[in-house]
Length: 207
Ligand SMILES: [Zn+2]
Image (cartoon, rainbow, N blue to C red; front, side, top):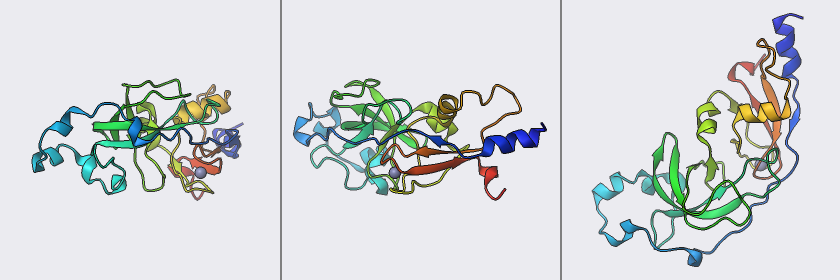
């Protein structure tokens, strides 16, 4: 079998994932813990420059009226391939940037999600195609640009909860054992709604 044949054989779309993720546990702002330190000080232009999230159009309207750095974001233990636990919408205080993502500190203890705790710092992405900002890993951010993630067939979400390499390893455990083998394209169930996402390497398009 030639190298090309191997790539072709692995390019056959295969279904990844197995179900829906319900976003639950929406908590009211009144559950909020103590206000963050910044709120006591006066606002100024300098303050705003240091807090680019306050002027990010994707985040506009998401901040708590009394706590202008606090918003709700989705935390999770991974997509449907990695956990049965539903993702949760939870209040976080935005504390900084990390590449394309923001850094946020979790204000409430999640009910079911186990990978993060109250007080933990997470990375999250805010994109126009998602109803809420959502937690991402550093690994996901590193790998994200190596793939094209087509928008979900149902909700338009064009990201994943899991790093693509972890997803491939989990669903296709035999891929990658041969150094000539590489996953070119696969489909996955959307972690937001259970719709279908097509994920492929940029070069795969049009072949
Ligand atoms: Zn979806």
